[in-house]
Length: 393
Image (tube, rainbow, N blue to C red):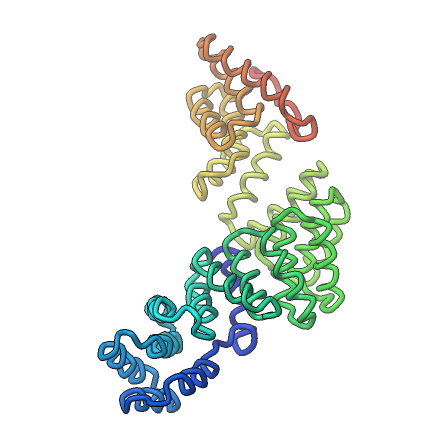
């Protein structure tokens, strides 16, 4: 389960009876007013709904739609009882049919959006929520759901636009404020994230998660030392929190406090022995200490867990290069280049390996790429790690 999915589920659970409540009562009233001469089957279907017999009610509404396929209200009611059974795919189909027959049917756009949202179909939920908000700009429910939909779809800048006023309108909703803060963080709007997480901590100073995320925001603002303080506070509150020790270790690593970083990475491995990044960064520190055997062992373990951690391949290639295992080094460094061809460090080391293998043409090609990338890159991000030691010890 992704981080975004977890946030969405917490929001769903906490807001089921408020923001996420559907409009079934409203549609019931509209249906009764619009179609006073309801058939006996329709009356039976409504009675079954009132009794909470949603499966039977769905069968009854299916019968109504079959006998009158132009009955928009019946399709709307069918969608609602299917939603009650969490059959959101079928519910969405019923809502779409209702809207095709009567685009102005009150409340159905919102329920269609909810059906798509609850399936995780965030892109499909945007249009119906947007239409509700366009028709009623003061609709807080639609505004909140549209913001959550953009968040679920990873469109964090758009999410902020809708979640900020929703959070201001509902300041006592911690899940909503948490998602707003997360949106600011993921959009790299660190000042916004800092203010939101600080506000969350004022309400709940013992929230380890808020301390961690405030630390991330501070790190994004280049206040890594202050970020360490927040992670340390989180560690006192919840020392067993997953990824916490890795996060603190990473901050120490950035500050080149490698002994402290190693202790935190080891603490993370005590919680999760196969933590990919903790293994990778421990391997990186071992390599910095010229312990190539330990570095290679840790980095191989990291790669076994996940094959997309660039630093693991970069350092493994470097370790194998020092051990004169040039073919193994070549393979690892080529993978590092695949993962991010814009970084000059892997190209340079790859050139050194080609040089050691006697392939001067490929070596020169890699050195040329290195020079070009150095010229393009910002000096603060080109090589944040120390220059590797000589090829031959």
